[in-house]
Amino acid sequence: MYAQKNPDRNVVVIDMCPQANSSMMLMGGGTEAESRLQTLITADTPKTVVGYLTDSVLKNDTSDLNKYLLKLSESNTKMPENIFLVSGDGNLELIAPLLSERADATPLSSTDSPWVEIHTIIKKLTERTIFGKPTTFFIDTNPSFSIYTQIAILSGQKLLVPINADDSSIYAISGLFNLIWGSEKSHPVYGRYTFAAKVDNFGMERPKIALLLGNRFTQKIGAAQAFKALSNEAVRKMFGEYEKNKSRFVDGENHNYSQQEFEEVYSCELRDFNSAGVVAANQGLPLSQMLAQRYYMVYDKEIQVSQDQRKKCHEVIEKLVEKL
Image (cartoon, rainbow, N blue to C red; front, side):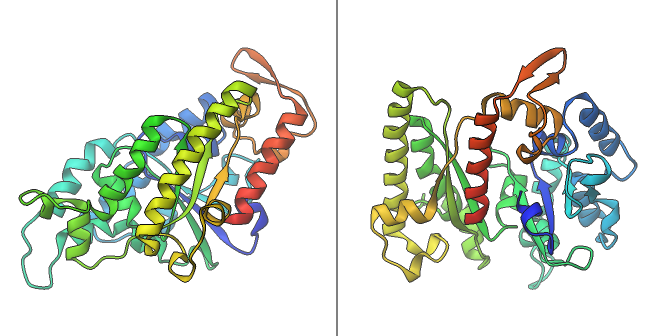
C-alpha cells in the first residue's frame, strides 16, 4: 500500500530473515513462490540478500543492482510497478559465522574497522538511489539477535516494533532496549563485547522507534478486554522508556508527551486478519484487490473472505501507512 500511495518513489523490501516469509508472500505466495525462491537461492550469484552480502564481503563490488533486486511485478502481477525485493534466503544462517568472523577480525591499520564494515553493508545499500528515483526501504528482521539482525537494525532510520498482547512481549520490551542501547548497568567483563557497546565505541547511529504495532489476535469480546489490558501495559512500559530516553524515539526530544499523547503518536493497533490474511499471504494478493470475489482456493480448500472483514483490515493498513 505504501508503494501504491507513493508512485513517485521506489520501494525496496530487504528480507533479512532466513525464513523468507515476506519474500514468498510478495512473490505471489504458495508453491509457485517457493519454487521461485529456490531458483533465486541456487543461482551462481544468488539473487537474494545472501548474494548481496557475500559479494560485498568477497568481491567488494555490488554496483550492478540488477543482480540482486527483483522487480516484483514481473513475478507477481498483483504488485505495483515501483516495488522491488532483495529476497530472503535460508543460507543467511550458514553465512552468519563468516560474517561474524570477518567482523571480529583484527584491524590491519588505524583506519581499518572490520566490525563497522560488516555491520554497514546493508546500510550502504539503503543510502543509494535505486533506479533513478527517491527510495523508501523496508527491512524485515529476524526475531533472534543474530549478526544479520544487527546488520538490519543498523541499516534503517526508523524502527517499527510489533508487540503481541502477551506477558512475554511486555518483558521483551526491556530486552529490546538492552540489546540495542545497552543495559543501564554494564557487565564489568562482558559489557564491552556487546552490540550496544560496539555501536557506542564506533560512534555509529542507531535507528529510532517510530511506531509500536499492537498485534491483535482475536476480536472476541472477552479476549479483547484481556488484549486491551496487556496492550495498555505494553504502552505504559514503552512510555516509561520514552520518559527516560526521549532521544530513542522519532522526534521524541522535541516534545514532552503525556502517556495519552504518546500512545496517539507512537502506537498503532492492528487487528486479526483472519481469512483475509490467510488468502493475502497464500496468493500474494493485496487486500485492496480483494474486491470482486468472495471465495479463494488455498491449496485444496475453498476459503470465504468476508468483504466487511476485508474492508476493516484494509482500513487498518491505510491508517498505518498514513502514519508512515
